[in-house]
Amino acid sequence: MALLETNNLGITFGGLRAVGNFDISIGEHELVGLIGPNGAGKTTIFNLLTGVYLPTEGDILVDGKSVVGLKPYQIVTRGLSRTFQNIRLFKDLTVIDNVKIAFHQQMKYGIFNTLFRFPGTRFWKEEAEIDIKARELLKIFNMEESADKLSKNLPYGQQRKLEIARALATNPKLVLLDEPAAGMNPQETKELMDTIRFIREKFDVSILLIEHDMSLVMGICERIVVIDYGMIIAKGTPEEIKNNPKVIGAYLGA
Image (cartoon, rainbow, N blue to C red; front, side):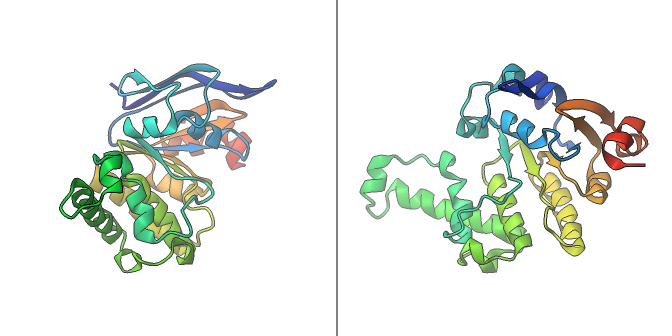
């Protein structure tokens, strides 16, 4: 059974068909790239997969069960987490608080424990456990010394890493990375490639990656899906994709 599978997935905005007949299957521990020209519909597909948009056709299956119609937070509990093309951190909160927020669905204490925070209650116990887990995540990304800084004061590359750390805090099976290398210099991009490889092994997750940096995509992805005008025009290995005439004409160039 595929971890993620879509069948004839599509969405129409008014008279514009933004995505159509999108079929993809991702298994456990896979690293798959999703590429295409600007405006091809890549982020729209991420929005469909994560419940931001409701598809007008087709189905989305996670572990064989449909998630169409579920809210984004409900889809997170099914094992899908994401980052965003434009960084979506809580910029006026600390680095550690940005990570701790992602643990909220794993918390068991209720409103009573929150209002009456007596010593030794479940509230304090769970908060202490989550603080430890969040700091362990930051340590993995070599960001533990920045835990108490405001996230808006981090360098750009570290803000990207923090967003990935927050996504991992939801305990996902599949992480959707939307242009994680956008705005990075070559050294930061190289570090990001190492980070993506590392988190797949460390956390045993699958990864679906949108990216325009072809050196990154070709360097780490095992399979690549190419879309143009919301439709899949090619699927295959990096070697097959870079030699595909349709892809060269639509995206890579001669």
